[in-house]
Length: 218
Image 1 (cartoon, rainbow, N blue to C red):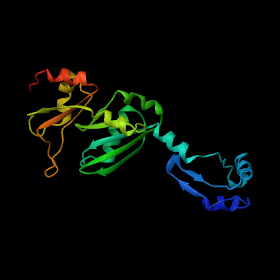
Image 2: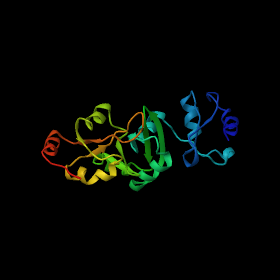
Image 3: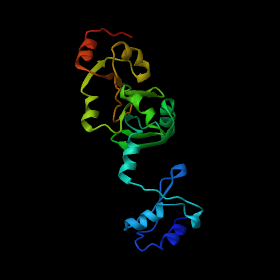
Image 4: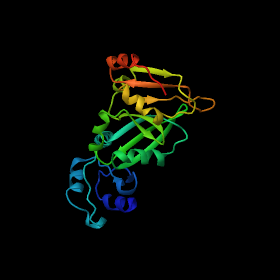
């Protein structure tokens, strides 16, 4: 199809480099470039009869990136034994996921989750973590700055002395009772088994101090 587009648009003197495809499936686009505003305007003015009535519209990569970002989450602390299918399914509880990509970061994955609509993102202003097969995955909006991301790790407490091989899902009741926004049981670099303590993230210094006054028992 790109060859057909090149053949059709070569009539314009300012037609740029070869047409190229971007993305895949229902999100696939054909991108073309012009060096002259008049040629560009003529190309987008009406469907192309010689190209099965394809319609070209203005496209800005920067705007497209911002649009994708507004529908996306940044995810950390994803254990390496989880895969994209499992993480995709976990986030599908919150909306229609159209993209799930995991990238290795030390001995965890970082994840990029994109929903079909920005409406699904607003709930994560208040949701700091989700559970995937018993494991807690920390989340924040992809549009957050580094300062905003770091603020979610500003007020942290440690609960030590927990039993071996406990997953975060087993500690959700405690996290709820102490008003923690997220929790994470770190994994050993060597054995990749859970360590005997859990980090609890709080939204403020006051809720952290209040939690330290409580006694926790199993």
